[in-house]
Structures are given as structure tokens and as C-alpha cells.
Image (cartoon, rainbow, N blue to C red):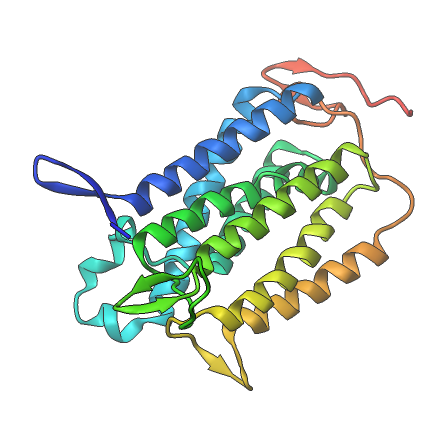
Length: 270
């Protein structure tokens, strides 16, 4: 793999950063197209996407720095070199989730349907981002000699990032299909919390890079089990009665509220 895509005035532009940008654009495009069918404005989607991207990168970088404090203590300026890689997905997931919660509350959007809408884009972004990991040579797999093995540090290994890319694309298709069936609000989000942690738990057995371990499992596997349990609980404990309301074109519910000085009508029961 070649981690550098090209140079500008002698400065390297890394594939990792390019793929992260591509993942963001893909998610925004997906949500824009999906939101257009539901009357959600592009401004609503783009503001959400920008906030989630920034918060996700910050959360992922904080998690990576905390997991590698000894390395970063040698040179603190390396903390901001996100373009060279070094993001932990679950840290990014937590950061983006917090941003989405704040955004939903600020825009007064029913959170369950909002979470279902947003989560449909996440595995698409993950799939593209993992290609960046593969090109960067990080998150490499355990030694192995399948026909599709790759050489990292002179050793043939499983292309684990590409395994996750394929897995995430499968989740993306499943979530989009299920979302369009209009299930009970919150269940699309719960389905992601069930599917992704299960696959991530198994894929961790093929990760060959250094991992933090505790009680016989690494940190990603332990957090996967926590999220899996949360997904199962959400799936079965969601109230039967829908609490969703129709939404305005910018993503906010049609209850009585001020919108740029105008009053929007109260929601009608359906």
C-alpha cells in the first residue's frame, strides 16, 4: 500500500485523509437524497453532517491519543496529525452520537425517527473510511496466506480493513432496506447496534496491530458487547405507541414553535 496519494509543493497528501473526506461526502449525499423524499431540507442535512463529522473526528482522535499516550507524550504536535491516520471508531461513534443528540434537541426533532434517519448513512461512511485504513497500512490483520492476502511490514496478512468494508456495505444495504419498510421508530438504530458490534467483535480476531486487552478481550470487543446489549434492549423495550410527529422541511416537528418569526401549525393526528 502507498499511504501518500500525491504531493502539493512538497507536502504529502495522504490517502487516509482523502478517504475520510470521501466518506463524509458520501454520507451527506446519502442523507440528502433520502431526506429529499421525506421533505428534509439540504441545510438541515448539511449542518448535521458537518457537526457530526467534526465531533466524530475529535472523539475518534481523543480515543486514539488516550490509547497511545506514551507515543504522543514524546511529541504533542503529533496529536493534530489526523491526516496520517490514528482514529478509533468507537470514540468517533460516541462523539458523533453526542453531537447528533445535541442537534436533535436544538432543532426540536423527535429523536427516535431522527436516529433512524442518521444511522442509515453511517455504515456507508465506515466502509469508505476503512479503505483509507487499508491504503494507510494501519489496522492491519493477523499473518495469513489466503489468495487475497497483503504484505505489511514484510509479512503476508489478512486485509482486515477490507473485510470490514465488505461487512459495512452489507449493513448499509440492510439498514436502507429496513428503513424503507417504515418499522417502529428506533428499530433501525437498534438494528445497527445489533449488527455492527457482532461483526466487529468477530473481525477483531483478525486484527494484527497492537490492541488494548482486558479480561481476555480487547477494548473494541468489550465495547462491542456493551453496544450489542444496548441494541437488543432498545429493540425489545421500545414503546409500541409511536411518538413521532410530522416534520417540517428543515427536519423539525410541526408543533407550535417559532421559526424565523413565523408560527408553524400544530401537528395533526394521523
